[in-house]
Image (cartoon, rainbow, N blue to C red; front, top):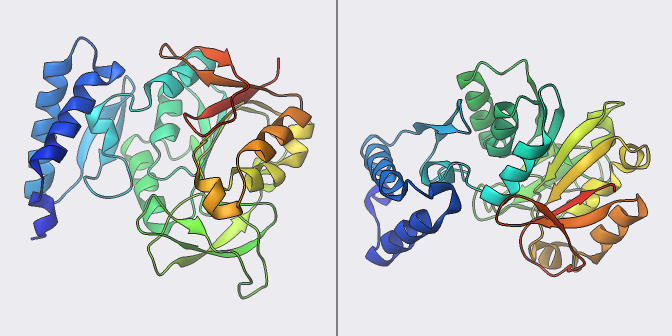
Length: 295
């Protein structure tokens, strides 16, 4: 039995408890949220198995304690309160939601709970397995197209490498077929794994996406470049992009090139406030996820 399942520093426990109590999704139910988390933690540590919990109103997810980020749903539903409230306001039954860097499917499942259908893009084989498990858990295999690939500026193959399943980045340089300059859209371990690379235009085809979420550890610009036709045609209504400093270590740039490309397609930039309302912003500094939509 892995000793990791039973290691927990008092300071870390206090930090987690504080984050649960302060999370806006737990307002009015803080004691219940702490109790549910404690029960789930004990069950997961004793059995070594994932815990099934609810995301949204009626959708379920298998949350793994130390694999791939799904455990944050156990701590709060929804885990990204402001950003996910934006999607709750904007997605309607039958809308198409594209989740690039889907990981275990947290955003994909949230979109399903809103009534949408989806395309979930994830190259890391272990995360693809979790994603498919979660879709099967909800009998939603026919509602979501799973694309087991990375997205980038051009098709090819790429090695993903990183310290864990959530912090992998692309490795620039030639692979077996000489392709380079593509994004990871997922994660791997330190040794890396070679995956197929596609483009957003190829995955989306001629379809219209109500929403697009991109979380690819700093390579968001490359995904946008691979979706030039869809953006130029105006077939993507609302975009959410991770906006941290990973682009500096990966591409040696801040987020200005991403903002410039979006603006060139007629998009205006926003961030979500604490109520999930989109507020216009000109602040391109690293921080919370940024949204883009046409006026």
